[in-house]
Each structure stands twice: as C-alpha cells, then as structure tokens.
Length: 315
Ligand code: ASP
Image (tube, rainbow, N blue to C red; front, side, top):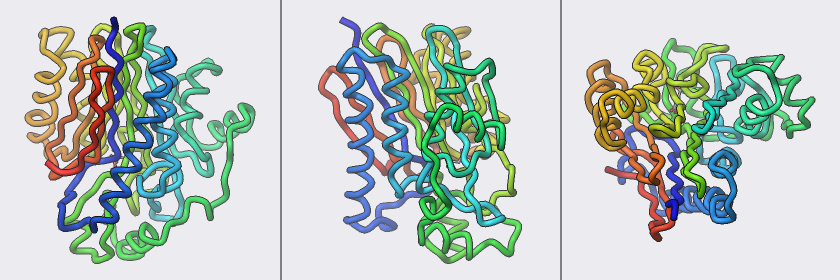
C-alpha cells in the first residue's frame, strides 16, 4: 500500500531554546501539530496531496505565531504583503501569488489560480480581483496586526535593514536572532501523487513590492512525481539565486540522489556557499521525507502512515 506522508515547516532561523519560554514553545508545537492533523485528515480520507498541503498551510496561516496570513510581518510602509505558491507533482500544474494584501489565506488563492485561471502567477491588484471573483475571504488591516511584529518593525523602520521574522525588539538582537517564519507543507497521497505549498509575509521592513522565493516555482516551491515535493524557508534572495527547490529535484532526476542526499547537497553545501541561511522540507513518491536546515533551528513536523507524528524546533 502507498505510504501517506505529510511534512511541514513553520520557518527556520536562529531559534535557540533560551529564546522561547516553555509556554511559547508549547504554543509553537501545538500549532505545528494542529497543521499536521488538518493536512493528514485529508490524506487519510483518500484526499489529494494538493488538498492536504492547502489544509496544513491554511492552518498555519490562521495562526498568529507564524509569518504567513494572519501573522504576516510589516513592510517598510507598515503594510502586509503576502506571497504564496503551490505545485502538483502529477501534471506539473502550479499557481502562485505575490504581493497581495488583505487576503485571509493566500495559499487558497494560489490554488484557485492553479485550478481556475489560465495563468500560473498573479500579483497585486489583479490577484486581489481574481480572489474576489473566486469569493475568497478578505480581512481588513486589523486582522493582520500583531504587537510583537509591530515592535520588530518599529525597531528598524528608519534603517535600510530588512529582517527575518523574530521575537526580540532590540535591533542588535533582531539582527542576530534571525528567524524566518514562512510556512510550508509537502505531501504524498494514497495515489502516490506529490504536492508542495508555501506561504509567507516575507521579511520585516522589506521594500514594498519586494518578492521573495516563496511564490517562485522552482525557488521556494517545487513538485514532480518523478522526484520530490519541496517547500523552502530562509533568506529568499539566496534561495531564488540557488533555484533551491528545483535543484533538489534535479539532483534526484539527473544524478539519482535520494531525497535526503539531494537536500543535503543543496541545504548544507550549495546554499551555505552563498550564505543562504534557511532550510526545507520534502517528500518523495515512496513517502520518504526529509527536513534539513543550515540555521540553528526550524519549526517542523511530520506525520505518516507508519505511525510517525513528530514536531521539533531545535537542531
Ligand atoms: N523565504 C521568505 C522570504 O524570503 C522568508 C522566510 O522564509 O521566512 O520571503
């Protein structure tokens, strides 16, 4: 029987045990478990990998702790601009959205673009209008407000720095305590089909209209049934330049690497060489999974039909 697997992340970076109170640690772990349960429930009912990754990412987007959807960081203009993408391994169908505001669940918009438009990639106002046609939920600015992310932005908004998601409000600490709160999921369903989905608010104090790797097919997200499904988190500019998600697939396709080997080369060698801090999760068509990062930590979790149900934060 085909193995069911769901592997997720909630961002990578300098996440040290000392930085999180036991209460916050529990909340992060609960958020990851809830997302795994939402996505895995779809797989268990013989649903598709695509619907499973959308369910898992939607759950993380609705959780204020993660930098996506509700918990998105502030741009240089004090707004929230979100990026998301999704890809199916069966037919290489993909949908992506960049720089949208007020959309409650950008991953659902990416899925609608994949399924119901003639396009792969929409941005800005055009994406917003398409979301309205598709009757997706829209929220006002207050919904996306969180005090700790507002403080992060206040600490750096007069500077040219753009920061990764983090908790402290001291600029120096912020720069040291780099965290990437992007969320993502990869799944293998009962039919051996793969899918990957990624969603983010980007980086604190980013230039308005800046686009990271998250919505870039091949950069932050990729899926192909012949190889793997991958979702990335990290310093987006470097992941775009490394074509990180697709490179894992290429190493499997052209060099016969296993998922683990291919991911290790990209995360711990190629990205490290260009100072591309972050990580990724992935599954292959046999239901194997890998979750690797070159940073101090990565919020991550996996649930599969062998009975594994684990979440982790630190190295
Ligand atoms: N990759 C995201 C970006 O660059 C950030 C993150 O992973 O948190 O927009």
